[in-house]
Image (cartoon, rainbow, N blue to C red; front, side, top):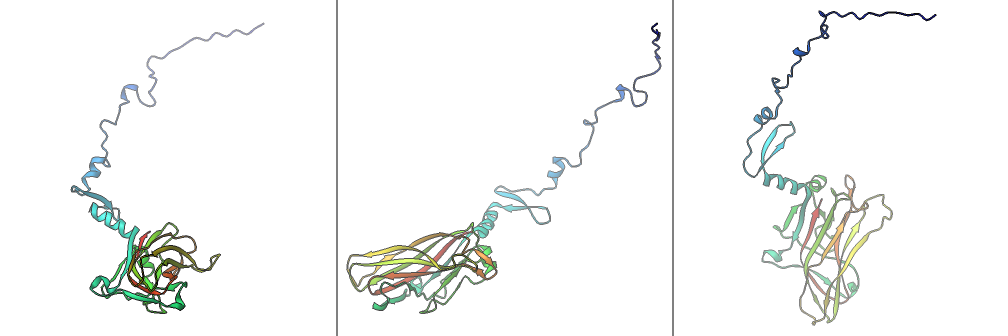
Length: 260
């Protein structure tokens, strides 16, 4: 026989559903009355007033400094690009530096000579290069002591353009002059031998004993064998020429344009 239970429904009108917490009428939105001490308006009030053409730059303490845009661009340029120029007295009412190519030097790569004028050195290398190596080159440019440019401070993201300003006076007609940058690698590379970037700079077909002007431009990137390997250990390069006739090279300037 089944068991039958009767359940009666009893309610208590005095018991509110939210008595233990709060009634629904007491739930209100606080967003409208909440004050935000870190609001944009409050933060903006602490910033310096920028003038037209200025930017706000955070300093090392996190404070914003009102900085002219031209100053920001100049600082970025100092870090990323520059040049290293060496000018002979040719540009100061004097003469270019001569390198004589005699018969024993024909068809041989020869280090050029350059006597840099006292006012002719322009060291505007990127900051990283100056910090890594205060001197931009070694050698005084005399015979047997060529100018060798330091690549210390550069990395594999760097690249450069090199320009020489010169003239060649051949002793014979129908000569040809080649130019190159010869690179020395840093230590621990494979291969470890020097390498060069070359070009034909002059075809001298209009007679001898006259100046043929040339401004060869050679571009290169800083690969992993000539970048900065360690302090005092980075690639180097120097400028050389090769002529198939005897004559006189008259070097006016050497310039490296650098992008860090």
